[in-house]
Length: 510
Image 1: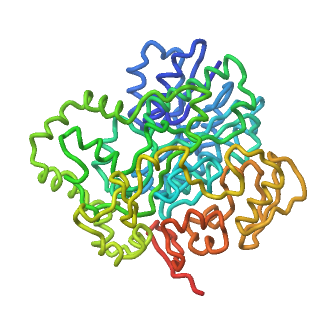
Image 2 (image 1 turned 60 degrees about the horizontal axis):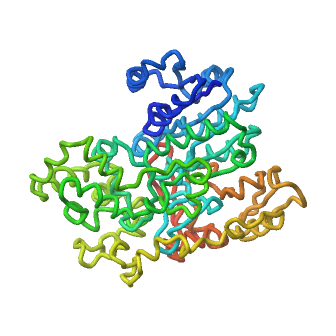
Image 3 (image 1 turned 180 degrees about the horizontal axis):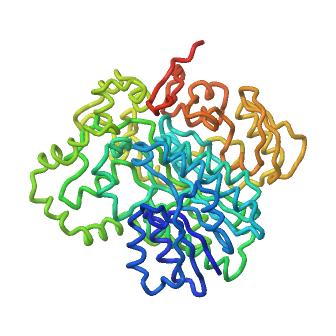
Protein backbone atom coordinates (compact mmCIF):
# COMPACT_ATOMS: atom_id res chain seq x y z
CA UNK A 1 0.00 0.00 0.00
CA UNK A 2 1.53 3.32 -1.05
CA UNK A 3 0.55 6.65 0.53
CA UNK A 4 1.45 10.21 -0.53
CA UNK A 5 1.71 12.84 2.18
CA UNK A 6 2.12 16.60 1.84
CA UNK A 7 2.95 18.96 4.69
CA UNK A 8 5.11 16.37 6.46
CA UNK A 9 7.57 18.95 7.81
CA UNK A 10 4.77 20.76 9.64
CA UNK A 11 3.68 20.11 13.22
CA UNK A 12 0.75 17.86 12.29
CA UNK A 13 2.56 16.31 9.34
CA UNK A 14 5.54 15.12 11.34
CA UNK A 15 3.30 13.46 13.90
CA UNK A 16 1.15 11.90 11.17
CA UNK A 17 4.26 10.39 9.56
CA UNK A 18 5.44 9.04 12.92
CA UNK A 19 2.13 7.24 13.39
CA UNK A 20 1.67 6.16 9.76
CA UNK A 21 5.04 4.41 9.68
CA UNK A 22 3.66 2.06 12.34
CA UNK A 23 1.16 0.70 9.79
CA UNK A 24 2.65 -2.55 8.37
CA UNK A 25 3.21 -3.07 4.65
CA UNK A 26 3.00 0.61 3.71
CA UNK A 27 5.31 2.84 1.67
CA UNK A 28 5.35 6.62 1.51
CA UNK A 29 5.97 9.41 -0.96
CA UNK A 30 6.61 12.69 0.85
CA UNK A 31 6.32 16.08 -0.84
CA UNK A 32 8.93 18.47 0.54
CA UNK A 33 9.91 21.96 -0.60
CA UNK A 34 13.47 21.95 -1.99
CA UNK A 35 14.66 24.55 0.55
CA UNK A 36 12.93 22.99 3.58
CA UNK A 37 15.75 21.99 5.90
CA UNK A 38 13.36 20.14 8.21
CA UNK A 39 13.31 17.17 5.88
CA UNK A 40 16.74 16.26 7.29
CA UNK A 41 15.03 15.85 10.66
CA UNK A 42 12.73 13.27 9.07
CA UNK A 43 15.74 11.39 7.71
CA UNK A 44 17.39 11.37 11.15
CA UNK A 45 14.27 10.29 13.01
CA UNK A 46 13.33 7.53 10.57
CA UNK A 47 16.65 5.99 9.58
CA UNK A 48 15.22 2.49 9.91
CA UNK A 49 12.31 3.30 7.61
CA UNK A 50 14.08 5.19 4.82
CA UNK A 51 13.64 2.22 2.47
CA UNK A 52 9.88 2.80 2.77
CA UNK A 53 10.16 6.54 2.04
CA UNK A 54 10.59 8.40 -1.24
CA UNK A 55 11.11 12.15 -1.09
CA UNK A 56 9.56 14.22 -3.87
CA UNK A 57 11.09 17.70 -3.89
CA UNK A 58 8.93 20.47 -5.26
CA UNK A 59 5.89 22.68 -4.84
CA UNK A 60 2.28 21.55 -4.59
CA UNK A 61 1.41 24.24 -7.15
CA UNK A 62 3.59 22.49 -9.75
CA UNK A 63 1.49 20.11 -11.85
CA UNK A 64 4.43 17.90 -12.89
CA UNK A 65 5.49 17.52 -9.25
CA UNK A 66 1.96 16.56 -8.21
CA UNK A 67 1.78 14.02 -11.04
CA UNK A 68 5.00 12.45 -9.83
CA UNK A 69 3.77 12.52 -6.21
CA UNK A 70 0.52 10.66 -6.83
CA UNK A 71 1.80 8.17 -9.41
CA UNK A 72 1.02 4.62 -8.27
CA UNK A 73 -0.25 5.67 -4.82
CA UNK A 74 -3.42 4.44 -3.13
CA UNK A 75 -3.97 7.43 -0.85
CA UNK A 76 -3.13 11.13 -0.84
CA UNK A 77 -3.27 13.10 2.42
CA UNK A 78 -2.89 16.84 1.92
CA UNK A 79 -1.64 18.57 5.07
CA UNK A 80 0.33 21.27 3.24
CA UNK A 81 -0.58 24.79 4.32
CA UNK A 82 0.95 28.21 4.86
CA UNK A 83 -0.47 29.22 8.22
CA UNK A 84 -0.34 32.36 10.40
CA UNK A 85 1.87 34.23 11.04
CA UNK A 86 3.64 33.21 7.81
CA UNK A 87 0.47 33.68 5.77
CA UNK A 88 0.25 37.26 7.09
CA UNK A 89 3.90 37.95 6.30
CA UNK A 90 3.92 36.22 2.90
CA UNK A 91 0.39 36.34 1.45
CA UNK A 92 1.60 35.25 -1.98
CA UNK A 93 2.83 31.96 -0.50
CA UNK A 94 -0.51 31.36 1.24
CA UNK A 95 -2.32 31.83 -2.06
CA UNK A 96 0.12 29.56 -3.88
CA UNK A 97 -0.15 26.71 -1.36
CA UNK A 98 -3.60 26.93 0.23
CA UNK A 99 -5.54 27.89 -2.88
CA UNK A 100 -3.66 27.38 -6.15
CA UNK A 101 -1.75 24.32 -4.97
CA UNK A 102 -4.90 22.58 -3.78
CA UNK A 103 -6.48 23.23 -7.16
CA UNK A 104 -3.50 21.71 -8.97
CA UNK A 105 -3.44 18.65 -6.71
CA UNK A 106 -7.19 18.14 -7.11
CA UNK A 107 -6.92 18.39 -10.91
CA UNK A 108 -4.13 15.82 -11.05
CA UNK A 109 -6.04 13.38 -8.83
CA UNK A 110 -9.21 13.84 -10.89
CA UNK A 111 -7.36 12.79 -14.05
CA UNK A 112 -5.54 9.86 -12.46
CA UNK A 113 -6.57 6.36 -13.46
CA UNK A 114 -7.18 4.83 -11.03
CA UNK A 115 -7.82 7.70 -8.65
CA UNK A 116 -6.21 7.49 -5.21
CA UNK A 117 -8.39 8.16 -2.18
CA UNK A 118 -7.97 11.74 -0.95
CA UNK A 119 -7.99 13.27 2.55
CA UNK A 120 -7.77 17.06 2.65
CA UNK A 121 -6.96 18.91 5.86
CA UNK A 122 -8.88 22.16 6.09
CA UNK A 123 -9.33 24.42 9.13
CA UNK A 124 -11.87 25.48 11.73
CA UNK A 125 -10.80 29.07 10.97
CA UNK A 126 -13.41 29.01 8.18
CA UNK A 127 -16.13 29.54 10.79
CA UNK A 128 -14.79 32.96 11.73
CA UNK A 129 -15.35 34.91 14.92
CA UNK A 130 -17.44 33.54 17.80
CA UNK A 131 -18.25 34.76 21.29
CA UNK A 132 -20.47 33.65 24.18
CA UNK A 133 -23.64 34.05 22.09
CA UNK A 134 -22.71 31.12 19.84
CA UNK A 135 -19.80 29.31 21.45
CA UNK A 136 -20.70 26.03 19.75
CA UNK A 137 -20.83 25.07 16.11
CA UNK A 138 -20.84 22.10 13.76
CA UNK A 139 -20.27 21.22 10.14
CA UNK A 140 -22.89 23.14 8.20
CA UNK A 141 -22.44 26.41 10.09
CA UNK A 142 -21.81 29.44 7.85
CA UNK A 143 -18.26 30.11 6.73
CA UNK A 144 -17.80 33.71 7.82
CA UNK A 145 -14.13 34.40 7.16
CA UNK A 146 -12.86 37.17 9.44
CA UNK A 147 -11.81 40.31 7.54
CA UNK A 148 -8.13 40.36 6.54
CA UNK A 149 -7.67 36.70 7.48
CA UNK A 150 -6.00 35.63 4.25
CA UNK A 151 -5.12 32.21 5.63
CA UNK A 152 -8.78 31.35 6.23
CA UNK A 153 -9.88 32.85 2.93
CA UNK A 154 -7.40 30.81 0.88
CA UNK A 155 -8.20 27.66 2.84
CA UNK A 156 -11.91 28.19 2.20
CA UNK A 157 -11.30 28.47 -1.53
CA UNK A 158 -9.10 25.38 -1.47
CA UNK A 159 -11.71 23.38 0.42
CA UNK A 160 -14.40 24.45 -2.04
CA UNK A 161 -12.30 23.09 -4.91
CA UNK A 162 -11.97 19.75 -3.14
CA UNK A 163 -15.67 19.45 -2.40
CA UNK A 164 -16.66 20.46 -5.93
CA UNK A 165 -14.15 18.09 -7.53
CA UNK A 166 -14.92 14.82 -9.27
CA UNK A 167 -12.62 12.85 -6.99
CA UNK A 168 -14.70 9.77 -6.24
CA UNK A 169 -13.38 8.95 -2.77
CA UNK A 170 -12.53 11.97 -0.63
CA UNK A 171 -13.00 13.47 2.81
CA UNK A 172 -12.39 16.93 4.25
CA UNK A 173 -11.26 17.42 7.85
CA UNK A 174 -11.35 20.85 9.47
CA UNK A 175 -8.47 20.95 11.93
CA UNK A 176 -8.97 22.92 15.14
CA UNK A 177 -6.42 25.02 17.03
CA UNK A 178 -3.33 22.87 17.55
CA UNK A 179 -1.04 22.55 20.55
CA UNK A 180 2.49 21.68 19.45
CA UNK A 181 6.09 21.81 20.64
CA UNK A 182 6.95 24.91 18.59
CA UNK A 183 4.21 27.09 20.08
CA UNK A 184 6.65 29.18 22.10
CA UNK A 185 8.96 30.10 19.21
CA UNK A 186 6.01 30.68 16.85
CA UNK A 187 4.23 33.05 19.22
CA UNK A 188 7.20 35.00 20.51
CA UNK A 189 8.40 36.14 17.09
CA UNK A 190 5.26 37.93 15.88
CA UNK A 191 2.25 39.86 17.14
CA UNK A 192 -0.16 37.10 16.15
CA UNK A 193 -1.09 36.22 19.73
CA UNK A 194 -2.64 39.68 20.13
CA UNK A 195 -5.33 38.63 17.62
CA UNK A 196 -6.70 36.11 20.14
CA UNK A 197 -9.79 37.47 21.86
CA UNK A 198 -9.69 36.75 25.58
CA UNK A 199 -13.27 35.43 25.55
CA UNK A 200 -13.03 33.57 22.24
CA UNK A 201 -14.01 29.89 22.42
CA UNK A 202 -11.20 27.55 21.39
CA UNK A 203 -11.22 23.79 21.25
CA UNK A 204 -7.65 22.52 21.15
CA UNK A 205 -6.14 19.29 19.87
CA UNK A 206 -2.50 18.29 20.11
CA UNK A 207 -0.32 17.64 17.09
CA UNK A 208 0.19 14.09 18.38
CA UNK A 209 -3.53 13.33 18.52
CA UNK A 210 -4.10 14.92 15.11
CA UNK A 211 -1.36 12.77 13.59
CA UNK A 212 -2.79 9.68 15.24
CA UNK A 213 -6.17 10.39 13.66
CA UNK A 214 -4.66 10.38 10.16
CA UNK A 215 -2.90 7.09 10.81
CA UNK A 216 -6.00 5.47 12.30
CA UNK A 217 -8.12 6.48 9.30
CA UNK A 218 -5.62 4.98 6.89
CA UNK A 219 -5.11 1.85 8.97
CA UNK A 220 -8.82 1.10 9.27
CA UNK A 221 -9.56 1.80 5.62
CA UNK A 222 -6.67 -0.41 4.51
CA UNK A 223 -7.96 -3.23 6.69
CA UNK A 224 -11.54 -2.80 5.49
CA UNK A 225 -12.86 -0.14 3.13
CA UNK A 226 -14.76 2.34 5.31
CA UNK A 227 -17.13 3.21 2.47
CA UNK A 228 -19.78 5.85 3.08
CA UNK A 229 -19.37 5.42 6.83
CA UNK A 230 -16.41 7.82 6.44
CA UNK A 231 -15.80 8.88 2.84
CA UNK A 232 -17.66 11.68 1.09
CA UNK A 233 -18.12 13.85 4.19
CA UNK A 234 -16.75 16.89 6.01
CA UNK A 235 -15.61 16.61 9.64
CA UNK A 236 -14.44 18.79 12.52
CA UNK A 237 -11.23 17.61 14.16
CA UNK A 238 -11.24 18.69 17.81
CA UNK A 239 -9.78 17.53 21.08
CA UNK A 240 -13.09 16.96 22.87
CA UNK A 241 -14.98 18.67 25.68
CA UNK A 242 -12.01 18.61 28.04
CA UNK A 243 -10.12 20.85 25.60
CA UNK A 244 -12.81 23.53 25.25
CA UNK A 245 -11.42 26.73 26.77
CA UNK A 246 -11.18 30.45 25.98
CA UNK A 247 -8.30 32.54 24.67
CA UNK A 248 -7.68 33.82 28.19
CA UNK A 249 -7.56 30.28 29.59
CA UNK A 250 -4.92 28.98 27.20
CA UNK A 251 -2.62 31.95 27.83
CA UNK A 252 -3.13 31.40 31.55
CA UNK A 253 -2.19 27.72 31.28
CA UNK A 254 1.01 28.55 29.42
CA UNK A 255 2.11 31.28 31.80
CA UNK A 256 1.68 29.01 34.82
CA UNK A 257 4.89 27.28 33.73
CA UNK A 258 6.82 30.38 34.72
CA UNK A 259 4.69 31.02 37.78
CA UNK A 260 2.54 33.72 36.24
CA UNK A 261 -0.84 34.35 34.69
CA UNK A 262 -2.41 36.23 31.82
CA UNK A 263 -3.09 39.15 34.15
CA UNK A 264 0.60 39.39 35.04
CA UNK A 265 1.80 39.81 31.47
CA UNK A 266 -1.15 41.21 29.48
CA UNK A 267 -3.52 44.13 29.76
CA UNK A 268 -7.08 44.04 28.38
CA UNK A 269 -6.23 46.42 25.53
CA UNK A 270 -3.34 44.31 24.25
CA UNK A 271 -5.69 42.00 22.33
CA UNK A 272 -8.49 42.19 19.80
CA UNK A 273 -12.10 42.06 20.99
CA UNK A 274 -13.45 40.48 17.78
CA UNK A 275 -12.43 39.24 14.31
CA UNK A 276 -10.69 36.10 15.55
CA UNK A 277 -11.62 32.52 14.68
CA UNK A 278 -12.53 29.72 17.04
CA UNK A 279 -15.42 27.72 18.46
CA UNK A 280 -16.27 24.60 20.41
CA UNK A 281 -17.31 21.69 18.22
CA UNK A 282 -20.77 20.33 18.91
CA UNK A 283 -19.81 17.40 16.65
CA UNK A 284 -16.30 16.89 18.04
CA UNK A 285 -17.18 13.32 19.01
CA UNK A 286 -17.94 12.14 15.46
CA UNK A 287 -14.38 11.40 14.36
CA UNK A 288 -13.34 10.18 17.80
CA UNK A 289 -16.19 7.67 17.90
CA UNK A 290 -14.85 6.21 14.67
CA UNK A 291 -11.09 6.45 15.18
CA UNK A 292 -10.44 6.93 18.94
CA UNK A 293 -7.67 9.50 18.68
CA UNK A 294 -8.52 11.96 21.47
CA UNK A 295 -5.96 11.08 24.14
CA UNK A 296 -4.38 14.31 25.37
CA UNK A 297 -5.94 17.18 27.28
CA UNK A 298 -4.60 20.72 27.42
CA UNK A 299 -3.39 19.88 30.95
CA UNK A 300 -1.50 16.87 29.57
CA UNK A 301 0.08 19.03 26.89
CA UNK A 302 1.31 21.73 29.25
CA UNK A 303 2.66 19.12 31.66
CA UNK A 304 4.61 17.56 28.80
CA UNK A 305 5.69 20.98 27.54
CA UNK A 306 7.03 21.80 30.99
CA UNK A 307 9.16 18.64 30.99
CA UNK A 308 10.59 19.17 27.51
CA UNK A 309 11.19 22.89 28.06
CA UNK A 310 12.80 22.72 31.48
CA UNK A 311 14.55 26.04 31.02
CA UNK A 312 11.14 27.74 31.22
CA UNK A 313 11.14 27.18 34.99
CA UNK A 314 13.87 29.81 35.24
CA UNK A 315 11.22 32.35 34.39
CA UNK A 316 9.87 32.02 37.93
CA UNK A 317 12.97 33.82 39.20
CA UNK A 318 12.57 36.75 36.82
CA UNK A 319 10.41 39.69 37.92
CA UNK A 320 7.09 39.51 36.08
CA UNK A 321 7.34 43.16 35.08
CA UNK A 322 10.58 42.38 33.23
CA UNK A 323 8.98 39.49 31.33
CA UNK A 324 6.02 41.67 30.43
CA UNK A 325 8.22 44.46 29.14
CA UNK A 326 11.00 42.44 27.48
CA UNK A 327 9.07 39.46 26.08
CA UNK A 328 5.48 40.60 25.55
CA UNK A 329 5.58 44.34 24.99
CA UNK A 330 8.54 44.09 22.62
CA UNK A 331 6.12 42.45 20.19
CA UNK A 332 4.21 45.74 19.94
CA UNK A 333 6.72 46.59 17.19
CA UNK A 334 5.41 43.71 15.08
CA UNK A 335 3.25 44.86 12.14
CA UNK A 336 0.88 42.07 13.19
CA UNK A 337 0.14 43.57 16.62
CA UNK A 338 -2.76 45.68 17.83
CA UNK A 339 -0.48 48.39 19.24
CA UNK A 340 1.31 48.67 15.89
CA UNK A 341 -1.98 49.18 14.05
CA UNK A 342 -3.02 51.86 16.52
CA UNK A 343 0.32 53.67 16.44
CA UNK A 344 0.48 53.63 12.63
CA UNK A 345 -3.18 54.59 12.21
CA UNK A 346 -4.19 51.40 10.40
CA UNK A 347 -7.86 52.29 10.63
CA UNK A 348 -9.02 49.35 8.48
CA UNK A 349 -7.69 46.79 10.96
CA UNK A 350 -8.75 48.79 14.00
CA UNK A 351 -12.33 48.81 12.70
CA UNK A 352 -12.23 45.11 11.78
CA UNK A 353 -10.82 44.01 15.15
CA UNK A 354 -12.53 46.51 17.49
CA UNK A 355 -15.39 48.23 15.66
CA UNK A 356 -13.63 51.60 15.61
CA UNK A 357 -10.57 53.39 16.93
CA UNK A 358 -12.72 55.02 19.62
CA UNK A 359 -13.99 51.60 20.80
CA UNK A 360 -10.38 50.52 21.21
CA UNK A 361 -9.50 53.65 23.13
CA UNK A 362 -12.36 52.97 25.54
CA UNK A 363 -10.98 49.56 26.52
CA UNK A 364 -10.01 49.04 30.13
CA UNK A 365 -6.34 48.83 31.02
CA UNK A 366 -7.05 47.12 34.35
CA UNK A 367 -8.47 43.63 34.64
CA UNK A 368 -10.82 44.54 37.49
CA UNK A 369 -13.35 46.04 35.08
CA UNK A 370 -12.82 43.77 32.09
CA UNK A 371 -15.42 40.95 31.86
CA UNK A 372 -14.06 37.43 31.40
CA UNK A 373 -16.06 34.30 30.70
CA UNK A 374 -13.65 32.33 32.85
CA UNK A 375 -14.88 34.37 35.81
CA UNK A 376 -18.58 34.10 34.88
CA UNK A 377 -19.08 37.42 33.10
CA UNK A 378 -20.25 37.88 29.52
CA UNK A 379 -19.09 40.67 27.23
CA UNK A 380 -21.63 43.04 28.80
CA UNK A 381 -20.38 42.34 32.30
CA UNK A 382 -23.48 40.31 33.19
CA UNK A 383 -23.32 37.06 35.16
CA UNK A 384 -23.18 33.82 33.21
CA UNK A 385 -22.36 30.36 34.48
CA UNK A 386 -19.21 29.46 32.55
CA UNK A 387 -19.37 25.80 33.56
CA UNK A 388 -22.91 25.54 32.21
CA UNK A 389 -21.90 27.20 28.96
CA UNK A 390 -19.27 24.50 28.52
CA UNK A 391 -21.80 21.69 28.66
CA UNK A 392 -22.75 20.35 25.25
CA UNK A 393 -26.41 19.93 26.22
CA UNK A 394 -26.65 23.68 26.85
CA UNK A 395 -25.25 24.62 23.44
CA UNK A 396 -27.00 27.36 21.48
CA UNK A 397 -26.52 26.48 17.82
CA UNK A 398 -27.03 28.94 14.96
CA UNK A 399 -30.02 28.51 12.67
CA UNK A 400 -28.77 26.94 9.43
CA UNK A 401 -32.08 25.55 8.22
CA UNK A 402 -31.98 22.12 9.80
CA UNK A 403 -31.30 20.49 13.15
CA UNK A 404 -28.19 18.52 14.04
CA UNK A 405 -28.44 14.90 12.76
CA UNK A 406 -31.74 15.67 11.02
CA UNK A 407 -32.44 13.74 7.82
CA UNK A 408 -31.52 15.90 4.82
CA UNK A 409 -33.98 16.20 1.93
CA UNK A 410 -34.24 18.30 -1.20
CA UNK A 411 -36.56 20.59 0.74
CA UNK A 412 -33.78 21.11 3.29
CA UNK A 413 -31.62 22.56 0.52
CA UNK A 414 -34.45 24.89 -0.49
CA UNK A 415 -34.75 26.11 3.09
CA UNK A 416 -31.01 26.81 3.32
CA UNK A 417 -31.12 28.84 0.11
CA UNK A 418 -34.12 30.84 1.33
CA UNK A 419 -32.44 31.64 4.65
CA UNK A 420 -29.42 32.87 2.69
CA UNK A 421 -31.79 35.22 0.89
CA UNK A 422 -31.44 33.24 -2.31
CA UNK A 423 -33.02 30.37 -4.20
CA UNK A 424 -32.42 26.77 -5.20
CA UNK A 425 -33.06 26.96 -8.93
CA UNK A 426 -32.84 23.23 -9.68
CA UNK A 427 -36.19 21.43 -9.53
CA UNK A 428 -34.77 18.08 -8.43
CA UNK A 429 -31.57 16.21 -7.85
CA UNK A 430 -29.54 14.24 -5.35
CA UNK A 431 -27.65 15.96 -2.53
CA UNK A 432 -24.36 14.94 -4.14
CA UNK A 433 -25.41 16.43 -7.51
CA UNK A 434 -24.14 19.76 -8.75
CA UNK A 435 -27.19 22.02 -8.53
CA UNK A 436 -28.04 25.54 -9.64
CA UNK A 437 -28.47 28.28 -7.05
CA UNK A 438 -29.02 32.02 -6.78
CA UNK A 439 -27.56 34.08 -3.94
CA UNK A 440 -29.01 37.20 -2.31
CA UNK A 441 -27.35 39.40 -4.93
CA UNK A 442 -29.22 37.57 -7.69
CA UNK A 443 -26.01 35.93 -8.87
CA UNK A 444 -26.34 32.39 -10.20
CA UNK A 445 -23.80 29.70 -9.35
CA UNK A 446 -23.34 25.95 -9.41
CA UNK A 447 -22.46 23.87 -6.36
CA UNK A 448 -23.16 20.41 -5.07
CA UNK A 449 -25.85 20.11 -2.44
CA UNK A 450 -23.28 18.50 -0.15
CA UNK A 451 -20.98 21.52 -0.55
CA UNK A 452 -23.74 23.91 0.54
CA UNK A 453 -24.59 21.60 3.43
CA UNK A 454 -20.96 21.96 4.53
CA UNK A 455 -21.50 25.72 4.95
CA UNK A 456 -20.33 27.09 1.61
CA UNK A 457 -22.38 29.82 -0.09
CA UNK A 458 -21.15 32.01 -2.92
CA UNK A 459 -20.16 35.55 -1.91
CA UNK A 460 -17.50 38.01 -3.14
CA UNK A 461 -14.81 36.38 -0.95
CA UNK A 462 -14.76 33.39 -3.31
CA UNK A 463 -13.51 35.66 -6.13
CA UNK A 464 -11.73 38.61 -4.58
CA UNK A 465 -9.69 39.22 -1.45
CA UNK A 466 -12.53 41.05 0.21
CA UNK A 467 -15.11 40.74 2.97
CA UNK A 468 -18.61 42.10 2.39
CA UNK A 469 -20.53 40.61 5.31
CA UNK A 470 -21.82 43.91 6.74
CA UNK A 471 -23.89 44.30 3.58
CA UNK A 472 -24.72 40.63 3.04
CA UNK A 473 -25.88 40.00 6.62
CA UNK A 474 -28.66 42.54 6.15
CA UNK A 475 -30.41 40.14 3.75
CA UNK A 476 -28.89 36.77 4.67
CA UNK A 477 -30.39 35.28 7.86
CA UNK A 478 -27.77 32.53 8.19
CA UNK A 479 -24.93 35.06 8.07
CA UNK A 480 -26.84 37.49 10.31
CA UNK A 481 -27.33 34.92 13.08
CA UNK A 482 -23.56 34.85 13.70
CA UNK A 483 -22.30 38.13 12.25
CA UNK A 484 -24.38 40.33 14.55
CA UNK A 485 -23.04 38.59 17.63
CA UNK A 486 -19.97 40.82 17.30
CA UNK A 487 -21.02 43.50 14.78
CA UNK A 488 -23.58 46.30 15.04
CA UNK A 489 -26.57 46.42 12.73
CA UNK A 490 -25.57 49.85 11.46
CA UNK A 491 -22.01 48.86 10.50
CA UNK A 492 -21.51 49.33 6.77
CA UNK A 493 -17.94 48.45 5.89
CA UNK A 494 -16.47 46.71 2.88
CA UNK A 495 -13.05 45.29 3.78
CA UNK A 496 -10.46 44.37 1.15
CA UNK A 497 -6.77 43.99 0.34
CA UNK A 498 -5.23 46.17 -2.34
CA UNK A 499 -2.80 44.78 -4.93
CA UNK A 500 0.05 45.00 -2.40
CA UNK A 501 -2.01 43.31 0.33
CA UNK A 502 -2.47 46.44 2.37
CA UNK A 503 -5.63 46.36 4.49
CA UNK A 504 -8.29 48.75 3.18
CA UNK A 505 -11.95 49.50 3.75
CA UNK A 506 -14.74 51.52 2.20
CA UNK A 507 -17.87 52.83 3.81
CA UNK A 508 -20.82 51.30 1.96
CA UNK A 509 -23.11 53.90 0.44
CA UNK A 510 -26.84 53.70 1.15
